[in-house]
Image (cartoon, rainbow, N blue to C red; front, side):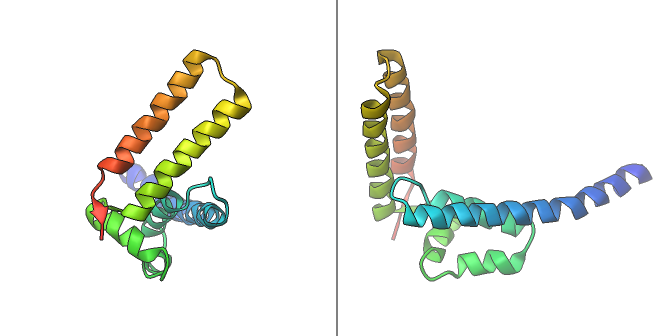
Length: 133
């Protein structure tokens, strides 16, 4: 029993830096997504906030209080809500991404239908979330 607690404590000391590093990776991907039109931003920042919640309350607060991204993150955390503009951008990005995929990869019919079904499922999920004010 004592050994289990000791190994659990060691994992806690090790996991905090891992959550912190992962949080920084997600912040980096989120800010890249803010600059690149087809790469998402918000999902990476939601993941970063979750990682920081497990490693650094100060960095979590920084993200949640960020003037541009904070309101969206707080709306997601409190209500699972996505702003109307975010829903439109996500669906437009998926449609554009599928168009580029179909044009560039020229997939066979089964792959084209499979990818379309996956993207439609993602779009349905985004559209089914409450709309943030």
